[in-house]
Amino acid sequence: MKQFTLPQNSFLLLLTIVTIAFLWILLPYSGAVFWGVVFAIIFAPLQSKLLRATKGKPTVAALLSLLVIVLMVLLPLAMITASLVDQVAGIYTMVSSGQIDFAHYFEVVMRALPNWAISILERFELTNLASLQTKITEFAAQISQAAATYALNIGRNTLDFVVSMTIMLYLLFFLLRDGRILAARIQRAVPLSVEYKSRLFQNFTTVIRATVKGNVLVAVAQGALGGLIFWMLDVSGPLLWGVVMAFLSLLPAIGAALVWGPVAIYFLVTGAIWQGVVLAAYGVLVIGLVDNILRPILVGKDTKLPDYVILLSTLGGMALFGLNGFVIGPVIAALFIAAWDLFCRSDEFQEE
Image 1 (spheres, rainbow, N blue to C red):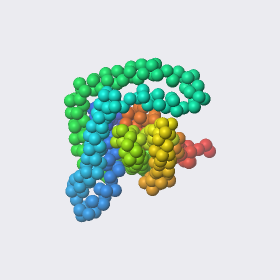
Image 2: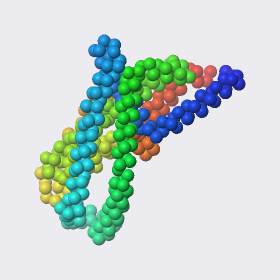
Image 3: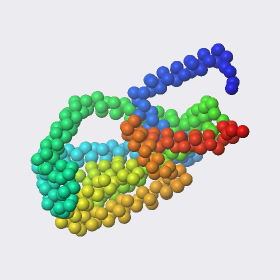
Image 4: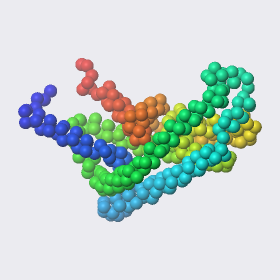
């Protein structure tokens, strides 16, 4: 192993310290930096096409790419968020006024259940309406307290969001314009062999594109289809439940069935047979199969991690990093698998 001199060791120590300090400075806006990098990787092919179309003008191509990202991603997301907030407020008003009575729904379902199902629920003390209402009231009080606290801080949160969005767009412009140069410099700086670096960097970019382009678009499709059928069946808050289904569909083996399944069961046990049958069939044949149809087209079979790895890495990533974890988790998992695959295949680490 190569031995470094004292000046070299001192420089490596200095390099480590200033790197940690720089990352510490970026920590308050790590989310903005992270999504700037993610969008730059996803839209790099678009930047390359626009660069050719503008005859090698990187600044113009980056501005056009940024405009496409704002119009295709950020603006629709802002409109959906505004509509979602309005719909949540409407549902809250309906619950407060008694138009939506969960106690009545509970009684209707309990009357429709067979005796064996009621006996199972009694073992878990889920048939006592008074006790259940008390728990719901306590939970609602906690939610109201949290909402009040959030309302007091809404001005600061809005300012933070605007600042983070501005930083992300500003950084994204330069990453789109100078991304290839920066990637080449980072790749040269990594102290690994060319084979290792190319394989790991390829896995990094591939998994980010697959996770965001594939999983997010599939989630949006499933959420939109779920919200559409809820709207057609006159279920309250179709946009809200569509967003919930889109979020749950990010998790393999869980999916949107956690939302449309109980609603279909409620329709069936309350006598709305055709609504229940339609929703169940639609959920299985349309919402459930959209993942199997779209994901191979958008992602490709060769880049797909095993479902159990995606599930565990996504849940773990979101537990540690919040919403950003649904990208960070699978990326770390892919790099883990790629690194161990390189280790097992490399002759340098095999015993003679």
